[in-house]
Image (tube, rainbow, N blue to C red; front, top):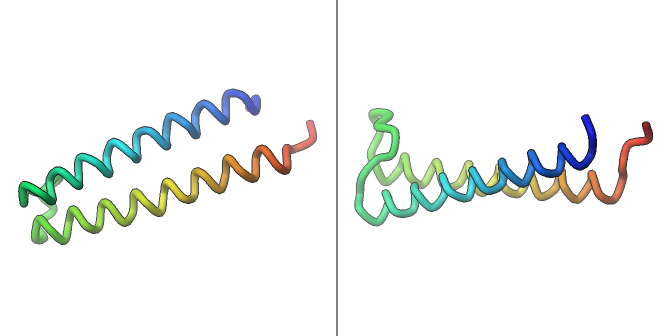
Length: 73
């Protein structure tokens, strides 16, 4: 896959995880679960927000390594 395409895909995923994070944050404020997994709403929203932060950090790391160490074609 072309590097430019990979970068745009990673940026799109970054935006998606950011949106999910903010939806979970709003759900935390309203004490309403996003998915209704059968666990308390606060725990579910905190879990989603933590996983989103982890995913965002991983995507930022991938973008960093892609820019600093490009693969040779």
